[in-house]
Image 1: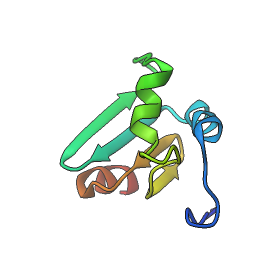
Image 2: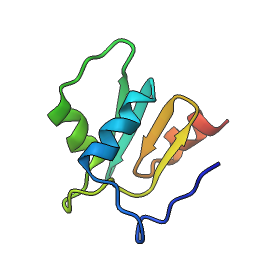
Image 3: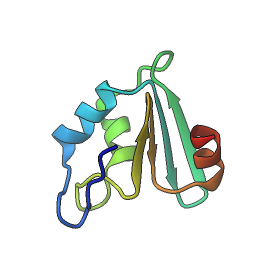
Image 4: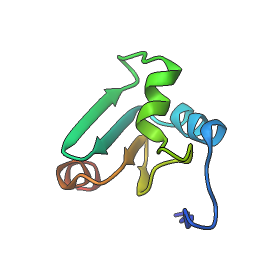
Amino acid sequence: MTQVDAKKTTLKEKEALALVQEVDEIYASKGKQVVHLDLRKDEPDKAAVLALLLGPTGNLRAPTLRKGRALLVGFDEASYAKVLK
């Protein structure tokens, strides 16, 4: 398992898109809204994916967690429970 401190190591657009290439699903939460993308079925455009992954500073949003082929961005208890079970 690799853990990266987002305060010390920032991941920008290029690194965020590289993460997307390694996953099949993205769960992104902003506030109470949760977006689930199944990349095996959906083909979102690059701008839509970046809008989910990057914060206002242009860095990968925290917390971000990757488990297997799933990427969790932001915190949503139900999404974490589903992916981490």
